[in-house]
Image (tube, rainbow, N blue to C red; front, top):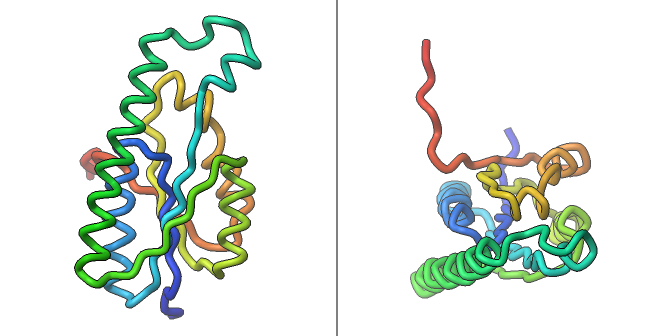
Length: 156
């Protein structure tokens, strides 16, 4: 079996990204792998400007942006703690097309495993990321681990 040497965690700067990051750290420690974190920045204002006015209720937009900022701050704390403990992490940030940017990073950094959260999406997240997981699965040359927020029990 091939040993995993380079792991990429995808962060969409939401609360679920932290769980994917923790999974990525755990796997990187277990395999002695290099860990990369790609922060994907999305602003739904662009979508509402292109589409019909009022597409996203103002309150939902504010909640999304506040949640994104809080999630980024929490993830920054966790990353800082890991790096202070001597665990190297390379952070990348992009506001470009998510699928193309992930493909670029995978190719340039020779990533062998992508770790990302399975979507727990609301209206805005669906508009921004709907269908991305399918596109990633079809296009990626490496394995992808989708992390669920709270897995349901398996009935036997």
